Amino acid sequence: MRITISQLNLHIGNFEGNLAKMLAAVETAKSQHSDLICFPELAVCGYPARDFFEFDDFIRRCQHSVEELRKVSQDIGIIVGSPTRNPVLAGKDLYNSAYFLYNGEILGIQHKALLPTYDIFDEYRYFEPAKEFKTIEFKGKRIALVICEDIWNVGDINPLYTICPLDEMMPQKPDFIVNISASPFDYAHAEARIRTVRANVERYKIPMFYANQVGGQTDVIFDGGSLVVSPDGLVFDEMPYFEECLKTYELDAVVGGNQNHEQPKDKIKLIHDALVVGIHDYFQKLGFKKAILGLSGGIDSAITAVLATKALGAENVRVLLMPSQFSSGHSVDDAKLLAETLGIQYDIVAIKPMYDAFETALKAQFAGQAFNVTEENIQARIRGTLLMAMSNKFGNILLNTTNKSEMSVGYGTLYGDMCGGIAVLGDVYKTEIYELVKYLNKDGEVVPQNTITKPPSAELRPGQKDTDSLPPYEVLDPLLFQYIECRKGPDELIAMGFEEALVKRVLRMVNINEFKREQAAPVIRVSTKAFGMGRRMPIVGKYLS
Image (cartoon, rainbow, N blue to C red; front, side):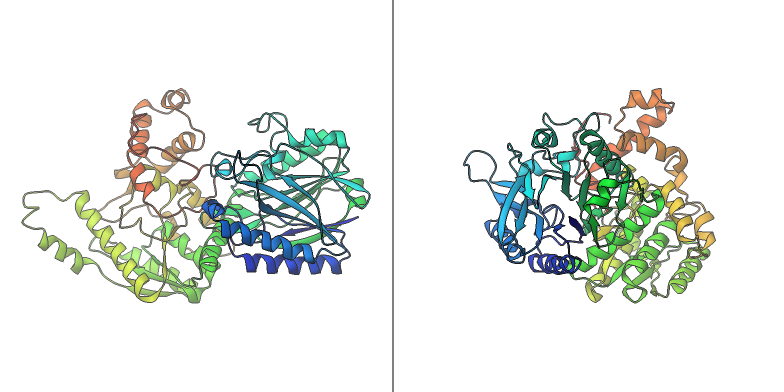
């Protein structure tokens, strides 16, 4: 038997586009004499469709796509993910399902049993869990068909559920497993995914074909990396990351195993590739072409400009240099050098005249008041206004350049430097920013060395440095990681060796700035705990503040 995995970049609600990709993949698989082709979870509509599932017309159009695939299933089996209606009045209205189509017929439908409702997932909001588990007989083989999370309950890997779907299917003696997935990216997830697939294969002693989605869906990135794992537990093949791919495999060769094609996984390269895909697909799927950002001469805006140029092309990236009376000369020079190196358009608009106008307008009200963060925020908001004006006038979507360290502790100005359509670096800590710039410069200097080596500064007052307001990033970031990603409380953090005063100060900054993050641009997710859907905190909560 020949089995094809089609790893596709799907678009939520783009039924015609998604169907066209699948129909083309079916024809390619047929040309390769494949017996079976596997598409990802909810492939007909894209994942995560969220409250689109509440629209009857959305579900009807999903069913239409399945019907069109059924028509082309002559001489080839097709496994495809789609929502299906629950015919029983009690329970949720829908199932998250996998269709098995062949020769114009529906050979079987298997519903998803384990519905993740944690982190970025909210599937129990829409779907009823499966209660029946039946293998599907096809061309003399019996197939255990499961969907994404259904394999994530083996042993101590992720024991969140009371049943294990494959345990229910094993008495039917399947020959191999097919798992169709929409498994989102974070920099640690690829290795976890392989461990999970391998644990299932070693438990059941049969091979698994694992088809994953690829591409960006606003803040959530899917990395692909579809897998074929043979009964010996070796990765027979691992498909590319962050790109569409179609491959066909001989079942007998997979069963024979004895080869390992697992790819190396470098954290910073994965983050880089995910961010480029995230920017590209955000623009492409929304029908946008051109981006704009403020280029300050600092490292965060520099990296964002490089990533945007890779994702969109130099002709589609424009930057605005907005020096104030507090900007150092080398900051402007560094920004100009980077723009010229990248070949992107840049404009220089000095903000001092506008700042002076604000100062004059508020002179009576601010009389006797010392310069403080108010005047700093005015500068940031002038820059935000200029960038949004350019965005409105020329149709360039604003990229936000705030990093995760700054976003965590509120070191940013609402309606100023926090403006933007998408936050590119909002899930990348400052210390990781420095690792990322090394990767960008690995084949020659792109980001100017002075941008990298100078002390981080917002340059909103004379001689300002980030460390005037924040602990050094090499101290701050490990603490933030333990609190945000690892959910360690204050006593645990102190026991780990963090100073008590530092813990109280930092946790208070994180918690009192929740209101800013609620209003921030969507953050491209690359870690295990990004700001957004995956981290839901009350704004007025007292705990730890």
